[in-house]
Length: 112
Picture 1: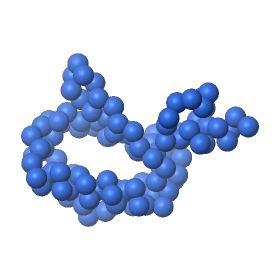
Picture 2: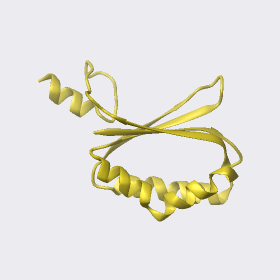
Picture 3: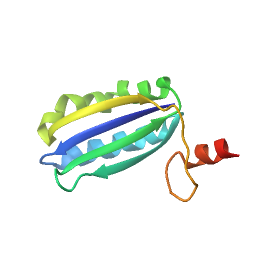
Picture 4: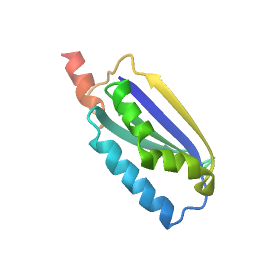
């Protein structure tokens, strides 16, 4: 299982950004192996982090190679004031089951 964290500083969004962002989000959620996502914002810096969870690298690669994602990468400087991506292997998932999280079902299965 993998996570891909897209951290960025928001810039000036326009209609093209919103349209492309919606297409990418819809496409990503339709990929077999997509497990869920969550977003975080740091109110002190204004930076945003979107974390996507993937069953395997093949699923993540489908997103990374999709034409809309490649277009967004080419055009990112129009809309963002910098970005960073971190791809990580998820070694485990656990919790007490009371927190809503995209991987909560996996944590609950492993507790049983």
